[in-house]
Image (tube, rainbow, N blue to C red; front, side):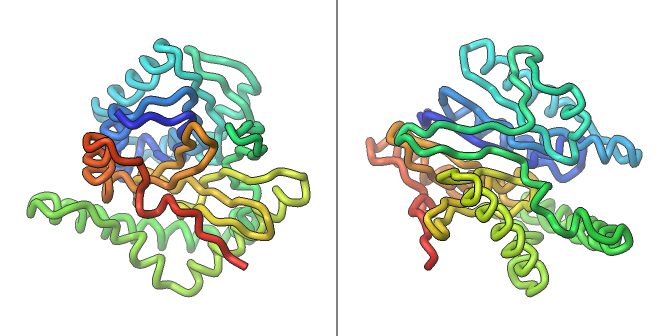
Length: 270
């Protein structure tokens, strides 16, 4: 088992064809933590409204696993996003042992204060012209359809997981500009409000970096990249790419090595 103080996941989008539920179940089955943060877009209510809702049995298994962890004493905190905004309407409360909060401040083991929020409020595109947003949604849906085909072919061929969508977006200038604008808005908000760091999701782009003395951390997603953020007992944060690095991580634990993914080193920008 991989042991952490806190684990943060976001953007699972349960109810869609693209949710990598099997990878997430595998991850949670190998992780022990005191706190598990669900940082928004866990359930895709938008897809339910559009009529494309998919809920195979494996998604029940994920919910049961989360409730089991809550019963075992893991503190689970659900910070709803825009795709599961219906949960926001419930307000602050608790259901089945899961705490529901619109946002919160996470006290790190090293004394740092982290704002935890889904992050859709920092998305300029989400709040822009509806036509522009619709075009973007259609383009993303097409990209994910191609990604599903590619993933299926690679799986049948016994090839390791690889995200076509993440690869293409990483090469698109407009996509990377969107990511940079989002990140700038997020860490600027954290800096202006006196936080040491901010943890969010929303844009499906995992990141751990320090800018102007503020640490920006994004959980990524379980649709394209299968990533999570983890805080160890000393308060250091690690970015885990589960689909890509899980064998390396588990082998390191079995060998008694210090657990650290290749991405765990904090990337610092001037």
